[in-house]
Image (cartoon, rainbow, N blue to C red; front, side):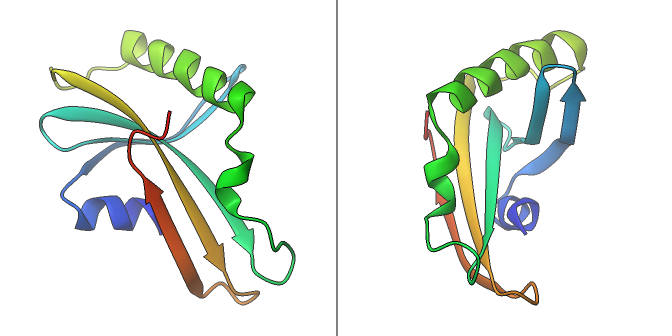
Length: 108
């Protein structure tokens, strides 16, 4: 759902679920002028009343930045003038229907 949202907003998805022994980047996208590293958090409405974005704490932000550096060093990517770190919070019903999607640009 988060990747579809980014595509609707004009982004090309460069990578999904990039994994290393240090963690995972959920989505790497580009809109032609910037590469966006996007952390995605999902919650099922009945299981958690908390906002999914509450889970993007300082340690997670540091981890995503380190993984982004590694991704840039390892992957071929478009030459752009800007890097950005976004967060997307997705809340779904128990049967998987979208209730809410919050996209915080430049979240960290």
